[in-house]
Image: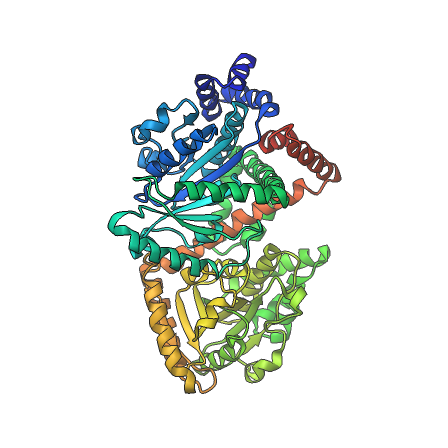
Amino acid sequence: MDELASSIIDGDPIALSRGITMIESKNKQNSIKADHLVSKCLPYCVDSFRIGITGVPGVGKSTFIEAFGNLLTKREHKVAVLAVDPSSSLSKGSILGDKTRMEQLVKNENAFIRPTASGSSLGGVAQKTRESIILCEAAGFDTVIVETVGVGQSETSVHGMTDLFLLLKLAGAGDELQGMKRGIIEMADMIAINKADGENKRNAEKAKAEFNKALHLYPKKESGVDPKVMLCSSLNGTGLDGIISNLENYHKTTKANGYFELKRKQQNKHWFMRTIESKLKSDFFASEKVKKEFDDHLIRINKGEMTPFQAAENLLG
Amino acid sequence: MDELASSIIDGDPIALSRGITMIESKNKQNSIKADHLVSKCLPYCVDSFRIGITGVPGVGKSTFIEAFGNLLTKREHKVAVLAVDPSSSLSKGSILGDKTRMEQLVKNENAFIRPTASGSSLGGVAQKTRESIILCEAAGFDTVIVETVGVGQSETSVHGMTDLFLLLKLAGAGDELQGMKRGIIEMADMIAINKADGENKRNAEKAKAEFNKALHLYPKKESGVDPKVMLCSSLNGTGLDGIISNLENYHKTTKANGYFELKRKQQNKHWFMRTIESKLKSDFFASEKVKKEFDDHLIRINKGEMTPFQAAENLLG
């Protein structure tokens, strides 16, 4: 593990891949090793900017990240791309699974792409992704992109582990019906309307105006930076420079006003608390006896023999 | 306690009030007594219909519940009105606090009105309200209305303890800006647009059409009943008959298709689990030593010496 840690810190992508595989392993022995590995890497993390990107399937996330990532590396950044997708076991890796969709970025020596961590629970996937971010930062990646699909609860997870949350949208009313949850707009620090090219451009302009209107209904951002709506085309590369400038502006402003540090501290506390809660629960339910008692009590509750509160008191003694 | 239980089961409103006061007490001794009381009452609960009602301040909840409750008693129902308002300690009882706003209902012998349970945590208030529902049902109230304000998290609580969730709205675009959270529309089983009278009627019709449009964007209800948008005026009593017919239809349909029972079972399991989790956490943090260790670990996390996950592992041993 010490050797693997040194190779990661030296920036060896193969070692980084192996390290993340270790983190993702469900084997108890490996998870102890992974823990050790993360401890070793932690002091070597570079200052980084963590960007969460979400958008429903079809919005062009892969092509966007490919164009965006390549542009960032041209500006001397080292870019790592990770994904959170709790549903990947069902969808068989709908996001990042098909690496060929990022043909250029995958060959770029200043980029590192890691397909979806699979896992049975979102909490588990989120923990693994957070620890993988540490390894990437220890390997010198100063820009970490965490991708997620715009359905389900994974956005909240990704929002809770990144410095900026970028929502990718398409022009056209149809998008609203694609299952994007409304709360996601509220979480966004920036909205980029993708595929704003050709005949689509006019619709995109209209969508931009609508989103700007919608954003005014939400309270002021704690970050002190008003969320911007930007147009872009991953196809012909337009708008990406503007997006990067705005991201840099967000980074600089929140660093200066203290929000950047504050948010990371809040995230730390949040994950610390969530992990304690989840461990307390899994330790408690680890015993077969408790599981059986839980089921027995549930039957009695449903029969109207006791309330859920009495049953809980009973179970916890 | 046995005597108090018998009086409650006999339908004595003063005994019911005393019982709820017992449930709401923060005194440890009283809470053991309350527990005993709830156990005694549980087998005597009548079959009931639990209705959650929410709406932002100004929407006319009190006048609506007064008119609605009186009409229900005329149809041979016994109506209990409770409230969940975790913020009541701040707002000094903004909901149901002023009983004089329900002048007629408060005098109606087939109605029981209980002002807001105050409490420091929403979880605590929710538990107390759920146990108070049991006492009301043991006292023969077959319709239990649980009121909450349309801000914060209390709607989710009330939604999780009732059979039907009724959202009260006002016509006019201003309402959207009154702080109502968007997710609430998704939870609604029925929307009633209040104050649809006089000059307001036209606006109310327009709002109805808009809500109907908005409701189509959400997935089909598990209940098998499409949420209806209804117009009413608590002032002149119009529309209330239609609302009651629709509620009865919902009740009948969900009883027949099994959703009513299923939802109650899901709610039982949910509250059972939440209570276990919250007890595990409060038991764990009850020790001063753990609290101090938590703070110490948090400092080390923020210094980058350990990850939140390692700290949690450490703390739980």
